[in-house]
Length: 350
Image (cartoon, rainbow, N blue to C red; front, side, top):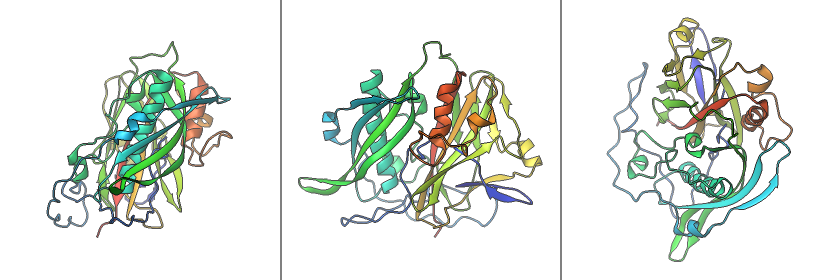
């Protein structure tokens, strides 16, 4: 998780939709064909103070890029029932080729991306780009991108809830355990006809691969004047996800931005109130790696607490993290809103 660290206080960050539910849990057992190595530190220098970073290990040998498996081309999505709150459930499958170098978290995120892309193409008739997930070799070699966001790429529709029904390594003839497979259900809603298609928000994370204790900052830029709500979804341990609300908080009661204004968090106002940095912290059970999602919601009008608070449950949400509860309420709110998200990975420092 990302913790807000101040001169007198250290507390859990309040929080972000996705997957975290979007991404895999922390604990994993390597398949028999070899353990999955974590990325090297060459692409992740420390950004803040504290103890100096250890010397990076030698650059790993080049590896094959993570790609969509050929069999994914034959997968067909099924449009299922309509949810009482307006979205439609669509079931799909996705598979990617894997090596013995990437983590299961990366493999699962890539397979989820592929399954979601098939669902959106079936229901909305649009092809999702790969902006939110890099399949390039550099990603696998510990560079600045592990996984990124799907949100901007999915317009003209949104996924407001999702369930992973099945996942894991699969074998194909002559290659044991070299596929990662996911079966997914996504609840998708088309963008309203009267939506402002020029209203967007962009989220940038200073670093997407961190080691415990590393510091990071966020940069948010909306296209139009809006109110900002910032979340962090992370592994709380034992396979559970949790979504915390970062902004607004006891430190920053409200953030309103002008169109085109780039806002960096923590900003000077936050630092005056005691938040000096966002510091990477692993869940209590200290897994080898934790994959988290940072999400920003931008609204043209201020949202009531009962809409944006992830701790207020929704009886139809698919998980207990709070992510789907917020999105479902936003979908029914009638307000004009935009979103963006980014994924980060936090590794144990050895």
